[in-house]
Image (cartoon, rainbow, N blue to C red; front, side, top):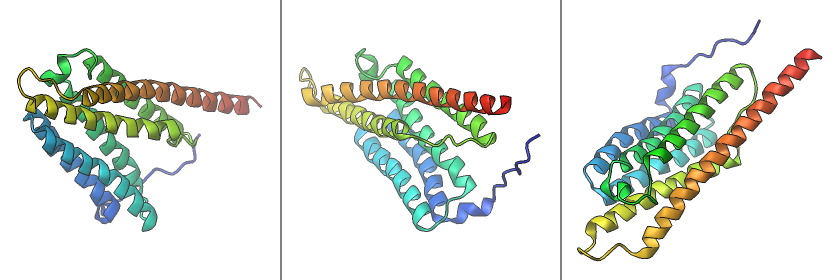
Length: 212
């Protein structure tokens, strides 16, 4: 029988600065999605940078002010996934992405969202058992590359929208967007496989300890 105490989440923790920034990030995501759907791509890019920037700020203030809370540990990764996965989902609805198979496609978003759901489920399961399943370097790099890919896609769509008829966007913007998207997808897959491997090793070790 587990002797772990139930986790209690105080709504009062919403009043601390890091959690307020995380909540703001969720609210900004709604405006971000509206801007993408309305084809305001430069405004979308600026909003995405601001929203992604609050992720660094809330983590910084949480450590600096010693305000790490259980609510924050839940809200922070949730807000990250809403912004990144939501942005990718809305990007796949744009003609600029659909028209070129090299750009962001629906199957890529399925891979990205599926990886996030799998790792979240594994983390919840293992941490409930008392195991450490913190984010590793590949997971953090994956997040960085996903943000770069989303930002590059928004800039590319703006260039496509502003281009003179018959004149394509700059080639470097085109290829940078493609490379960043595919790099993000590949690292997402690699990171997901690595997390599964780590989870398997943890469960195997626990099983061996129980047998002994």
